[in-house]
Figure 1 (cartoon, rainbow, N blue to C red):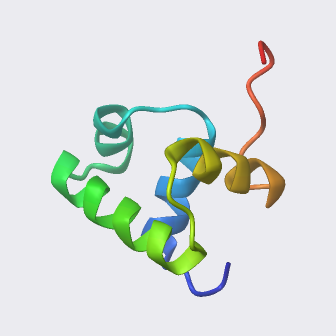
Figure 2 (figure 1 turned 90 degrees about the horizontal axis):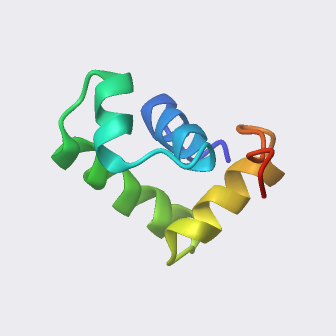
Figure 3 (figure 1 turned 90 degrees about the vertical axis):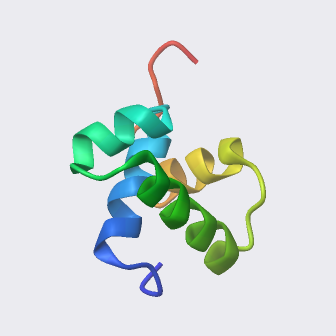
Length: 70
């Protein structure tokens, strides 16, 4: 996890909360394009392909809490 930048960790945390790219961009004061750039690099660094798996990684690493309705 240390290979991720602070911004990447913030994006991953919000993915773990099931936020959309647009919601993440708004929360981080970034553009949707920048969020997608971060998501690409997070996927490469963690070797994860699917957004659902990124959300699981965020929860398992303690960056996010699982939504209570799952």
